[in-house]
Length: 227
Image 1 (cartoon, rainbow, N blue to C red):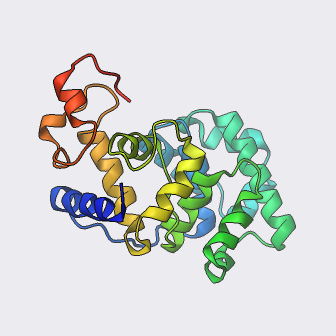
Image 2: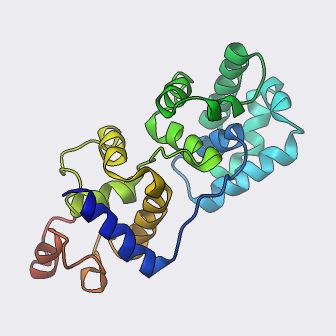
């Protein structure tokens, strides 16, 4: 599967779901905390948790100085509040130690690999979280790979079924044109949610069926491994 197939996928999914343009969604530090809160929960609940956190505390300095128990109370709606409150405190403390202040705007001045490496030095920050910060806060072409993108990419043959989520970040980012990384990310998630579902994918409704190597297997054998 080459770059032409990637671009064809983006073109067809754009026709299906609409044009996707990146607009910065908060500061890098906001997005970092939002991403921590989004782990293992729905977007709705993580959004509620983030709004509650920002309402409870006037600024990130106040969050950093607060007991973990008070942070946990404010984000309880998002689930795993004890784990996430401790993680947030650890991350804020490390940023303050390394930068002397609680801000990450300087990342916009670094080359993408340096910015990503800096973020990954923070406690518990892996490839997906680092890429979310760079893409959503700065519109830097760093590609976060979630479960939908991983599944759909494997079914389309962009990456091998044995490729790990961690490795997929590097492989897929290298394939997608930098100016289309945001669109690819959003469109592939939307397609995974609507059509290319984990169980019972709706292949006969898929606009990518003409070149999807998994199409015949799913349509011809209802008992085929879901992928």
